[in-house]
Image (cartoon, rainbow, N blue to C red; front, side):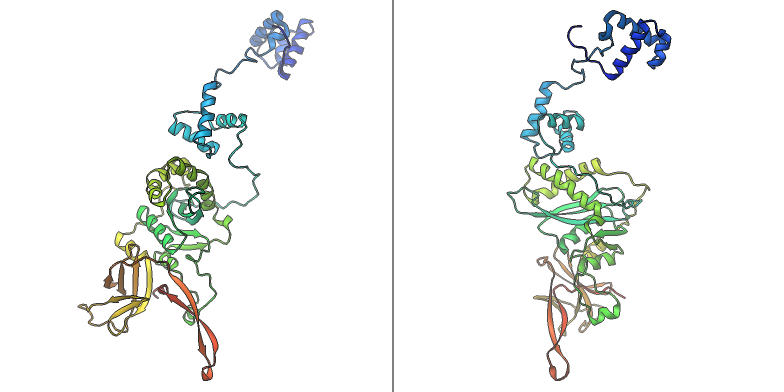
Length: 424
């Protein structure tokens, strides 16, 4: 072997020991113990040393390419695909797309080394982790869901922002339901809940932030609420109570970390895949989410719970349709009508009762826009669909006191929005 001989620290140690064998300072058997080799292996090494000297101790493949190394053509193809089609994909996501769409099977570390060698930086800078105390996930599927809405430019900077509503299971990190809508609202949460009930059933609890659609954010207490000891819930809050779903409000984003991390992953992966699929509208995105993205996402990220089984409770279609709705408390007028804003619902006589005048009833607007009126558990009237609009809350002041002095008493007025108090 000509030229310089490069030896590792281990090979230099072998050279020094075998030189002592050459000088008859050590026997070969003793040298094998110093080298931590079997006697048979030491004899083979000694034979190479006697013929080639120090060069015989160098690894035979040193300086030669690995037989498992990627060919230059494959490296160029991977780089070309990343720069032309998958430029906004992270390393792991890009690796998955190479296998799924291009039939190129490589490891994430190989992709990372190829991209870094080409001076292509990672999509996100990885910060050192902070110390946080981890909350143990629930043990069974359906014991706790986390849900939220994420306003973002999901279809790219050239399109207006939209909101992705999503619910994730705490025990399995499974994406339970997701869809795009215009804004995070009461209607959006009701439709998200309806999807969960339709696919899986009623969960035991839901963890969420303090969005005004989910919890009362005002500090006004009516006399009835003071006597009751709690504020009346929002429309969504009332539905959760009727379904006996425990509603848990988080006081910080970190408290509902699973759904926050979910949106971080989705903003990284989903935007890139929507662009790849040439999807740029809510109408096209939602069917694709259900049929394609969510199943693949769950195969990649969902995990097994510590306890088998499901805590979801089945619910019948008619119960789901009735309960997941806006519910208003109203008093029937003398002409047997219920008036909600500009809407008038006629209540016909029934075999049980000819007139419902002065009767307190519940008017429900269902997710398809249709209306029904209920006297307890009995449906007494219905109305054709009207636009399903977000409830509006406003305030007025009432003069009170002697001589009609304008001592102002704050009253909360719900315009087509006062949630009916829970029975009992």
